[in-house]
Length: 103
Image 1: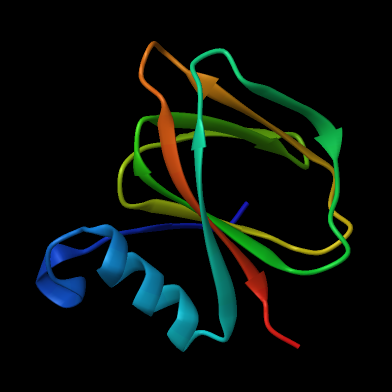
Image 2: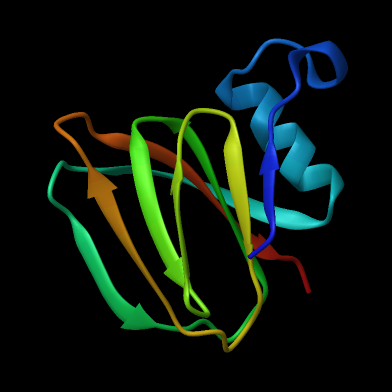
């Protein structure tokens, strides 16, 4: 599983605008979502390459036999057609930027 972390020294302060620009520069279209505590996405895949980036909260991703909990500033690369699950961990909502590879 490919995870990346926000680096304030290189990326500047973590905020929604900065993370959105980072993803858009990579050629992704970005949407913002807020997921409530307890929200669970069962096994699924996508027809396009994606990145899930977390701005706040804790988001567990399980993919290809690996599990990771993403926190503020973390992002995961989700290749197209790779089965994965996701769920909000803890009592805080997850604010996420969902990035889809632009055509």
